[in-house]
Image (cartoon, rainbow, N blue to C red; front, side, top):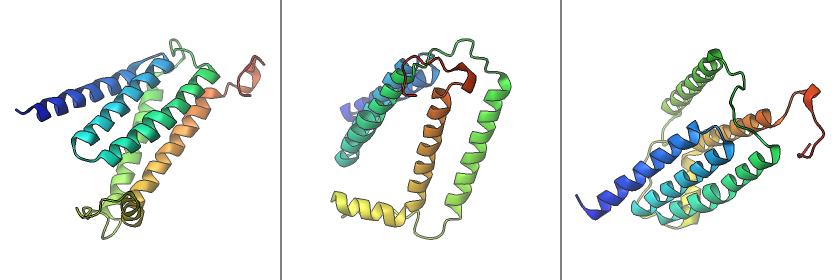
Length: 175
C-alpha cells in the first residue's frame, strides 16, 4: 500500500467520522463545526484525486460561505440542544419515509432523463469556464436536484428557527 493510499483512507475515515458526529450531535453549533471538518476532508480528497478546482470550490463555497452562514444562523436563532424536544418515533419514520420516497423519485428521474446525462467528461476539458459550460449543458438535472435539496434545507432551517406564534418572547433575534 502506498503513502497516497494511506492518506486517502485516513482522510476518508476522518470525513465519515466527522459527518457521523455532525448528524448525532445535540448541540447545533458543534454539529456545524463537525460538518465544516467533513467539507475540508472532502476538499482534501478532491486534491488527492487530482481535481484541485473542485477542492478549492469545496473550501470556498461549502466550508467557507455556506457553513459560516449556517453557523451564524444557528447562533442568531439560538437553537438549543434537542433534549426533550418531544420528537416521537413517528416523526423519524415519517422523515425516513419521505427521504426514501425522494431518493426513489430522483433515481427514477435520472434513469429516465434521456441520453447524454451519463456521459463522462472528456479529459481535455480543464478550464473552469469549459467545466461550467459542460456541467450546465449536460448535467442540468443533477444541478436541479441539488438546488431542490438546498431549498429543502432552507425550509428546514426556517421551520426550526421560527417559534410558534404564541411563544414569541421579544428578546433579540432576527424577528
